[in-house]
Length: 173
Ligand code: ADP
Image (cartoon, rainbow, N blue to C red; front, side, top):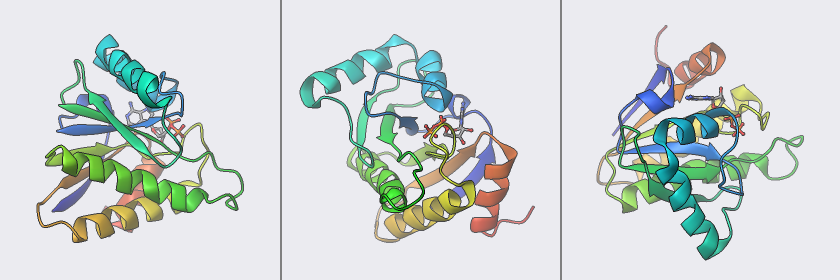
């Protein structure tokens, strides 16, 4: 088990599963969601439409899995982060669930390497420092309970998240 932090574009980094910060419609959107669908091509949306037909989308805190189209991965795991609404609407627990449920799907599909964006810290305005602490805690506690190793890479698009994640993981600058 290994947790790493890199700065970059999640669509450019090879992994068994790339996690997407999606929305409940699963139909694509802005930010990292848009980047993943653009880079992966239409196959990802086709798979999302099958899930929509089956279960009508994805609830906040939950996750679903599709193929990865042209991305350098086997799967995309779409999870829906909470919109920050002051912190009194279960946002912290829902964000932790995103990480847990994504890793559970990755494990169920025998993924060894999983990349995560900083879920909810873009358009959904979750405070970045709090989100970094929750992300690290949720991933560490999930991995601690796993006999088979999963390597997790946090792929940070912006400098602030990159610094916060490194600080949370006590990685030197
Ligand atoms: P949310 O709606 O969950 O806030 P966003 O996509 O707006 O989702 O932002 C989530 C995080 O993903 C933000 O920190 C944003 O900077 C980051 N992000 C945007 N594009 C990319 C990308 N290509 N690779 C990795 N992270 C990205």
